[in-house]
Length: 196
Ligand SMILES: [Zn+2]
Image 1 (cartoon, helix red, strand yellow):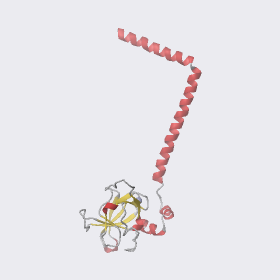
Image 2: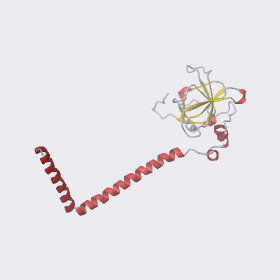
Image 3: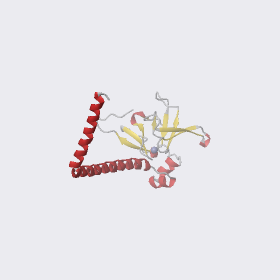
Image 4: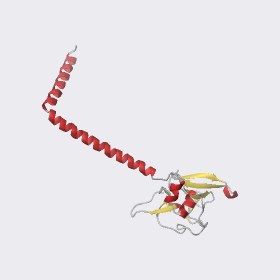
């Protein structure tokens, strides 16, 4: 056994002894510390559980069945968002709306369009030339009414928004034609720039 190993051995024995001695001397103290530590641990895990539960609830807040959607939405919102209805042209609340902010999904609150992408298309529905972020809008080919159109739905909750056409007058060439009933609006906070 080398000198180093022997030193190491002594050190280990001394350490174990020190721990043992410390433990015996302060048995009661240790007990208190340990039980306090357990209490803290229990509290931390309780907090973590609570947080996890809250996060799950946030996701679970979305209705799962059509009956739940019906209970959550107004009759008109249900008809358009869940049954793919269309509001009458030139009647929507957001058609002539020009405030700065973000348009959100009426079904789940997901941000969908920036007011920067809104333009007057004269088609009777609020129109945007791009989605707020890639993927927030889902596109599906829609062959109803004897036409081939591309339906747009909320990427998060699947709520029907309207249709997208490739005849837009801006550089994107797109026209997202959206029912006012399908969307909500969050005005931009003062001295805060909105994202494109
Ligand atoms: Zn949604």
